[in-house]
Length: 526
Image (cartoon, rainbow, N blue to C red; front, side, top):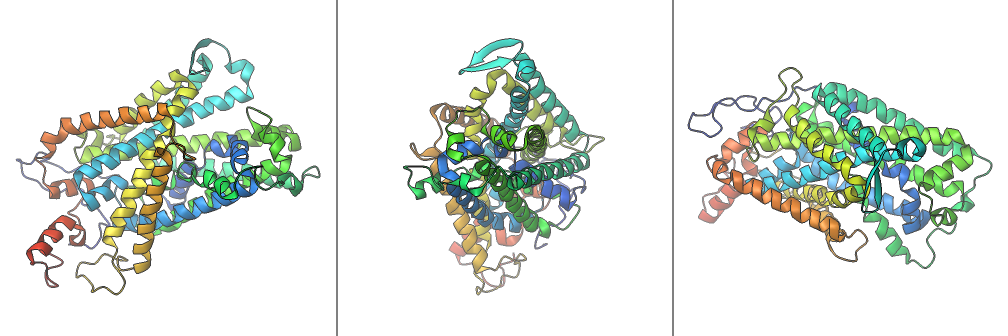
C-alpha cells in the first residue's frame, strides 16, 4: 500500500455486481504548471472588491484598522494553509475538500462539504460576471443604462448589463471546456496585468506631489473602539482570501510535484494581501480618507485615484478590475466544475458529472451546469444576487473546517511511536497544533457569519437563501442514498481517490480494532 496517493490509479477493476462496475472515472491530464496554479489561487482571491470597496473598508476600520485587519486575516489564512499543503501533497486528486472530508469523516460529511463548496464557488462565478457588468455601468453609464427592464430590491436592471454578464459567463465556460492548459495560461497573464496595474497605481499616487501620508490621519474612525475596528476587517478575511483553496481542486492536473502546493498557496495569500493593502494605501493617501468615505460616492476608489493621476488612473483601475474579475470567473469555473466532477465520481450526484470531454478532457458537464445556474443570476439584479453571494462564505468556511479537521486527525505528535504506514510529514507536533488552531479559526469565522449582530452577520435574505440550498441538498442526498448504500467504502475511495486510502487514515476501522484490542504495533499498517 502506498503511503500517499501520488498517482491515482486510472482504472481499477470492479465486479459486475458493483453499482460502479466497469471502468473507473478517467483521470485528468497533468497539464498545469506551477505559475498557472499560483495564478489560479491569486486571481481567484483578488477580484472586484480590491478595487471597488476600499472606501467602504476605510469607513469600517480606518487606514490602520484596515491594514492591520488584512495583515491578521492573511496570517489566519496562512495557518489554515498548512493543512491544505499537507493534504494536497498526500492526496493530489480533484475535489479537494470533498476528498478530505471523505478521508476524515466519511461519505455523508463528504457530500455535505462538497455541496456547500459548490454553493460558494458557483455564487462567486455569478458575482464576478455581475461585477464585470457593474464596471461597464460605472465607466459608461449612458451606454449601459439603456433598455430598462425592471427593478429588483431597488436595483434597476438593464438589458445591456445582462448581455455583458451572459457573454462573460459563456466565454469563460467555453475557455474552460477547451482545456485546462488554455485557461491556466490566460489566468497567468491576466494576473501579470493586474499586478502591473496595481503597482503602477501605488507608485503614481506615492510619487504625486499632491499626496502625502497626512491624508491617512486619523488612523482609526472617530468614536470606534480600535479592537472593534480591526475585528470588523478581520471578519471579512474568509471572503477576501477565498481562492487559495482552489489549488486542491486542480491538484490532479499538476505537472509538478504536489509537495510544491504549500509554497504556491503561501505565495498567493501573501501576494493577495499585498495587493489589497496597496490599494488601501493608494486610496487613503490620495485625499483625506474620512472625507472620501463620507462622500457617498458610488466608486470612491476611482474618485481618489483619478483625482491624483487623472484619466490614466481610471484606465489602470479598469485594467485591474477587468483582470481581477476575469481571473475570478476563470478560477472558480475550474474549482466548481472539479468539485462537481468529484461528487459525480463518488456517485453522490448523477455520474454524468464525472465524464470528461472526449476531445479536451475537461469536466464539461460540470462546467455547463455551472454556466446554466449562473445564467439565471444576471436577471435578478446585483442587489438580489448579493443575498446569495453573502452566504457563499459559509460554504468555503465549512471547507476550511473539514480540511483542518482532517489534517488534525492525520497529524501525530513528533515523539509518538512511528506507524509502519506513516505518511510523509505526518509526525509533527507543530503542524498538528496549527491544524487544530486552523479548525478553531474556521469555527470563529462561521460564528461571525451566523451570530446576529456580529461584524460579518448574514442578513435575513441570505439566511433564507442558505436554508433553501440546504433543503435542495437534502433532497439530492436522499434521492441518491439507496444507490450509494450499495457502494462499499473501498469502492468510493477508488472512485474519488483513485486507490484505497492509506491504512493510517482508515480511522473507523482502526477505532474498532482499538476497542477490540486487536490493534497492535505489528498490524497498525493492516
